[in-house]
Amino acid sequence: MSKTWRIAGINFDHMHMGDNLRMAFDHPHAEIVGVCDDQPDRMTSAKNAFGLTDEAVFTDYRACIEKTRPDFVLLCPATAHHADWTERVAEYKLPVLMEKPFAATLAEADRMIAAMKKAGQPLAINWPLRWYPSHITTMSLIDDGLIGDVIEVHYYDGNRGPLWHGADKDPSSPDFVAEQKSKSWFYKKDAGGGSLLDYLGYGVTLGTWFHSGKAPIEVTDVIDESAGLEVDEHSITVARYDCGLSKFETRWGTFTDPWTHQPQPKCGFVIKGDKGTISSYDYDNTVRVQTHDQPEGQDVPVDEVHAPFQNPVQYFIHCLEIGAHVEGPLSPAMCRIGQQIVDSAVLSAREKRTVPLVQ
Image (cartoon, rainbow, N blue to C red; front, side, top):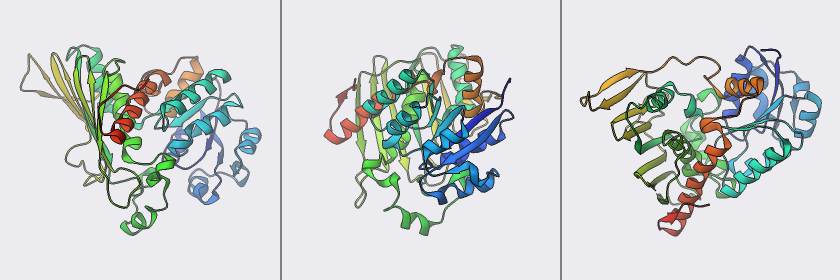
């Protein structure tokens, strides 16, 4: 590394800002130079955790960027505001690392791509599941041809709900969750709330990775319709590819959070190829592999993952340092296919029919 990378964290709508700032703080060649949110109390925890001075805390993003002069910006706004915030930062011709999902709609995702192209700067969309050793190992085994051509991806993921935990996975109380449901953007339709928009992008973007960039032909989706809620807490999406069907299920309301105790069904992926299968569960230390030679299956230890491929901040700095394109599930091109599937699922759920892949 030839420099210390100056990083600003702007907009704390999503609790993952605390996690991403932690990665920046822990990076040996990075420095948090500023944080910004229009609600100062949302920055208190980060200010204390990372020893930030009052001069590094802002409520106006322009002042934050102009006074701290970051090398790139971490963004964690509500889903429906991803395009707006990307365009604001793009005016300063700065690289952007956006926390998942890509956007609330394909049109907004395309606005983000256009803004960053005009600025001449890279855009990356972070999906935390991308960094789990189990899923990294699975992709490596697929690339090695162990299970042949992928023909099915099955995904189930979620947690007890977005209000049950904060930054660094700090748990909340049931009373807090009940009180905040009517107030939180996660439960507001116009802000991009709901389990589908929160978690489907994970499944279909990593699913596109496992499918080697292939897009489906058509999509069918069903969501729950809970009384008193504007948004879903459970969705099931079936995507038809030229090679068969894949299924992606999102759930707020798992029995336990997967990072404490894996619920049943277990959170993660099961991938079927024409020569074998892999089950790849979040946080597991092994993946389960079946092949024609070992149809009974075997547990394969996950790969040991080293820097700069352990988290999004490491990876984005690596790409900036060597001038490499952002690849895989963080790349706008692959994320756009995921967003097409998400848009198709939203349309299918609303019209209660199978729809062609939204273009």
